[in-house]
Image (cartoon, rainbow, N blue to C red):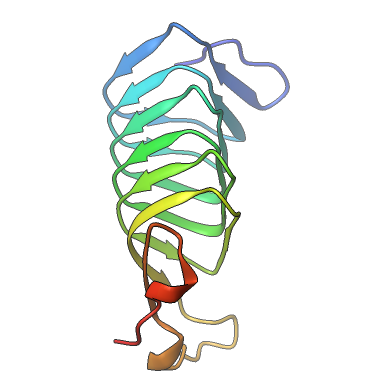
Length: 134
């Protein structure tokens, strides 16, 4: 399934609503809505976009609304992000102004060691004051 694909980039346009599972190679830029699971290499969720379902991608940049779990390598929540769901990641960046309600869990490190329990964080509303060790 391809929506405006050019050179490994798929754009889901504003006004387009997809119901169902989406799988794509390369970069997916979401400007519309997806109700279903999304699997891709890289993902950009624009400020007006909404995804309700799970996300699996190596690189995830969220500047819109996501309701569901995110599994990714590098995950960035931009200032207009609104994420409700758990995030499994290798690295997580949360910009000031982003909203995050869920658990963040760092995946195994590159050397195969599991992160320290103190490094596992529970974040609510992307406020550092809510950080608690498991």
